[in-house]
Amino acid sequence: MLAQRTLKSIARAVGVGMHSGQRVELTLHPAPPDSGIVFRRVDLPRPVDIPVRPESVCDTRMASTISPGGDPGAPKVQTIEHLLSACSGLGLDNLRVDIDADEVPILDGSASSFVFLLQNAGIALQDAPKRFCRVRRPVEVREGEGERLMWARLEPHHGFVLAFEIDFNHPAVDATGQRVSFDMGSGRYKRDIARARTFGFTKDVAAMRSRGLTLGGAMDNAIVVDDSRVLNAEGLRYDDEFVKHKLLDAIGDLYVAGPMLARYTAFRSGHALNNKLLRKLFAEPGAVETVAFADAAQAPAGFAELAPAW
Image (cartoon, rainbow, N blue to C red; front, side, top):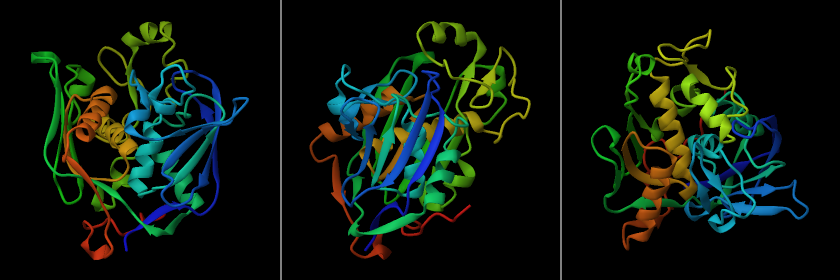
């Protein structure tokens, strides 16, 4: 049987929220089979649980934000995508995340710190079959035209592979790789994807901060780009770090639906379009089904192996 996974022990992290700038502590707990990933706001007079589901997403401006039932007026947790991307990369199914503010800490701006935390806690196999959302027929969402065109697509595939292309028309970004493809069954998520950091442009900082965004952003948790170059002294971690971070985000955005068997392809997509794609997938009758593998050998290659330790 290809089994569900949770943590062996508790892990903690302290940092600041990228957008709120507030100090935040989160505690990662093992969780029972079939419970999924649940955020718990422990700073409220009465703790509020927020299950991670496509319909829980209530805001997609600059990050993926969830609330109970997707109610924009309810308690929320924002910027969940990097932690969820790490959970996807390690195949974690069940996790309780206690958090004492409304935003997941940005840490170093990538998913690698979360991978490190999760692997240090240890991965435990559970006595329950791992359930996948298997895409049965193509689903696509498109927005804009010409230079503003963006799209994302899911197609049937025995595994989970992703391809992403960016087009920022910016000299610093254009000098790097614009396209990336990745197979989640390869076992190379930690090495090839997890270290890609979020990025921002100095020309946008004042406008975003006036809207209460990126208040916690700094060069130790983001790639900062001016009109022509990367300002971080250490440069880029990958030759194609910009597009790899967009792929990292997409992995996290899609993991609100849990483990998936599909081929994902996107051009200039983001949090909003990724969530619209999931909602369309689940709204179309027969487009997706839930499957498990009683015989792990029947699962896609690489899915039964635990990710190697650091």
